[in-house]
Length: 302
Image (tube, rainbow, N blue to C red):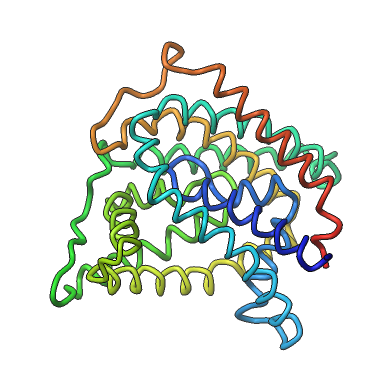
């Protein structure tokens, strides 16, 4: 029963991460941080590539359970939520803003020991805000972007471009605050990659080669970037937590600009288009996730 409970809890964690990863503005790393398993998530990714045999085996067990929920969540997003994101952008954006605003106090409370009496490190929070805002301002006006239509032979330039973009995107996806999907928008690959995933799920395998290139880029990005994040959390935790909080704050600006990145751009969010109802629903989701964590976290640690 304990093993089954662990599978369910970690699958739910992965599912929530995938929903965040699949739309611009919110990072799956934010969900992992909020649900209290971010250190374990980063540690498991690092152990998968660099750990001893026992640590690698434990990492595989954890990541497979997490990955099961992530795959379901991402597939659902590719089939359903991306179109919902297009048609209800302001409601979804308000929801994510509520998620972030209500999540930040929880992060501060849980990392109080790392933050207390270290106010000079607030500069790292400012850097975090500035970084996310700068990335957002680089986003294209429209999300149509690069053409990755199926071809009989893949162009070498396209392969290299998709590979490097995937490396950058996964680096952002594992960081709380900055969305990997936002980086894909900057590279002009968000709509093409999501479309390729949707086509492949519909058994159109002509897009599979470019998705394999994308997956290879993700693997290399993890290999190079995750160890750096783990080192920062272990050796410079206070500075890193301040930077993460800054990136979460900066993501609020990123979310307001989300409508500009649609295939048919809409005006940036304003007070008139902000939905207080969905904002509060986002807060309720945070509360629900915290309740889920408090009820099931201990069994999931096995």
